[in-house]
Amino acid sequence: MTILSDMRILRTITVVTAILIGPFFQREIRSEELRPVSWLTGESFRRELEKPFSASWSREELRTMLTQVSTDRRIACVLDRRLDSSAEFPVNVTNVPLDGGLTKIAQLVDADLSLPENVVYLGPKSAARRLRTLIELRRLELQAEETKIPERRRAELQRRRTIEWHDLDTPREILNKISNESRLPISNDTIIPHDLWVTTILPEVTLPEALSLVLIQFDLTFRWRESGMSIELIPIPTSVSLERRYHPKQNLTESLALIHQRFPELDAKVSNSEIIVRGFLEDHEAVSSLISGVASKRPVRIDPLQPVAKRRFTFSANQRVPIIAVMKKLEESDIRFEYDRDELKAAGIDLEQTIELDAKNKPASEFFQDLLGPAGLEFQFDRTTVKLKPQKATAPQK
Image (cartoon, rainbow, N blue to C red; front, side):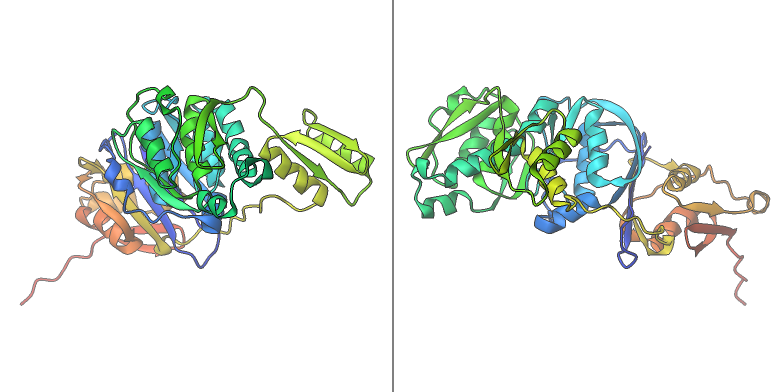
């Protein structure tokens, strides 16, 4: 069985709980279902990744889980072609940041998460570790004087745009679609092997980001050629790193010792009046945060659970489901049911009764009416508790 619970940080924001029950839920999520989503970007994207996330699947395919989370939270995801998207496994996370929940899912297939702008990438650990650094290196090369790329051309190549490809598109077609938008021919695209990919959307990405998200899946990157008028695909170097120089306000020796204490494997040294660090982009973000004393990521604040009455619910099943099964999954999302078993039995109410239930983003009152009404139950909300009673008999009209 599957349940997704989105418990918002601020009391003023409506809580959305999406319930997807399995094994009753076996409907294939079609690619076209991704298109109507208004994908989050920029600060909204980053804030969403910090918000609390709870999910429970008894057994589900990796791609189905990601699709459900992606569409529910409006976070675009790229699943590396080398991961087994049909792998099935159970997942159970409660009240963790969304990016932490996705990381746990990735770890189940020995993968990891990378977070370039506006996209969540799940791929092999080595690829996820290098992705953002490769993107940054291509961006820096674009800005470097040695590449002799005119300023207007630089701006065009860094313009953000939404890129989408469809079911059965090949990687070579996708790469050429991306490059053609900026009139940027690829000199050796024939080295990309044939494959068939599924619909994916990259919201508001730059050309280096889009190209890198595709090429990383073949252990490739690219180099700028002809003053930014074409590119050549090349293997990712064995060593991928950025060098940056830091001028901490504190004592240099003490600052270097702090870096080595926190990141013992990082290449860092003092040179003259600065600290030189070589590492991945994420390493530099952590070092900058450490020596400046400014946290790189805001802590997630989890306020008291939202009242049931303020939540909204989504449910899909392709066959009838027992009422009690839905109730038990709701209880895993910190919703409690209060009722007198003897009273329900005396009224002839059986919670094992199966019902047809299909709801999308419904208010709590409508959702619970659909769930409990067919059994002859009425309900009352009390914070996170749903109190159940047999429906009162209606007096016959005279």
